View 1 (cartoon, helix red, strand yellow):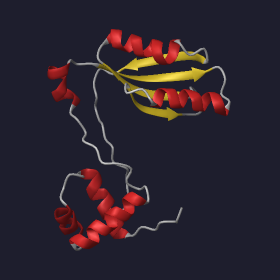
View 2 (cartoon, helix red, strand yellow):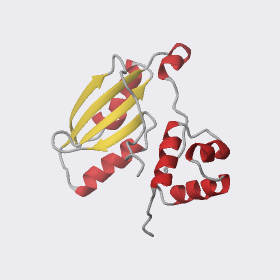
View 3 (spheres, rainbow, N blue to C red):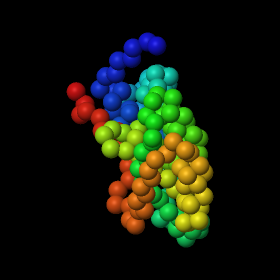
View 4 (cartoon, helix red, strand yellow):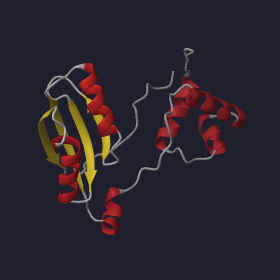
Length: 163
């Protein structure tokens, strides 16, 4: 893969897209003071280089709660018995394929994995725990922390100030 370089304009584009990826190419170009064709070309290059993984809508859990039920969000620590490369990879692939798992981190020291999971209610969480943890003979320890309030949620990657 070719090495990509980025400049101050690319950083401005990345920052603007992190704040609002729904803006039109013309609005984005005006925001970073470049022409729309240049903007389109640069954004395409950033996507092709993998710097922009995907564009998604961030839903409001608080506003959806009255419509769908409040749900449970849990941060779950997982420790495995065996930590060889195959065991770690197998567990990681299995949990990453489950829609209830929003985030999965392999961590050190301490537990082997930290997951952020979303469930409709406690029976749904128990089914998730059975499906992902209890049925896996390699899972030694599970420690779940249930969220009572979300104080901050963000997706922005801090970028250096423009140069």
